[in-house]
Structures are given as C-alpha cells and as structure tokens.
Length: 102
Image (cartoon, rainbow, N blue to C red):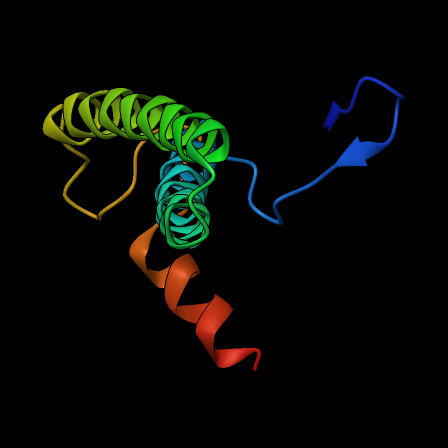
C-alpha cells in the first residue's frame, strides 16, 4: 500500500497500477477543466496575473493528462489474456462482481 509524505495510507480499493494511472488521468483532466474556469473568472475581473497562473496550471495538468493517456494506451495495447485479465489485474468476472456489491 502506498503512503503520503506524512505516512497516511493511500488506497484506491484496487491493487492495480494501471487503475491508478486511470485515476491520475481523470484527476488531471478534472483539474485542467477547473483551472480553465478559474482563469476565465480572473479574466472577467481583469486580473491578468491570476489568468497567467491558472493557465499555467491548466497547461501543466494537460501535459500530465497527455502523458498518462499515452502510458495507458501503451499498457492497454499490450493486451490481456483470453479471460480479460493479466498478472496483477482483476479478471472480467472479478470486475463484474465489484458492481454486484452495490
């Protein structure tokens, strides 16, 4: 299990680095969207310093998202076994059972 800098355990509920990569991609895209809105708000108020700052943050997260997407595409292109699983990954049946627990 991973921990934060302060030693707090971090868990995604799934022990799979590829799943973690999906979460990084999602978070980077959400943050990029958020920063773009912040930049627009700052622009409406004429605060160019904040526009530049929020735009820089959005650009950074866009780059992170692009890297995560490329890494994920490479990993997914490697393929999976016939049963939809590969080492360290949940099978299709296991993933379906996660939906049944709701």
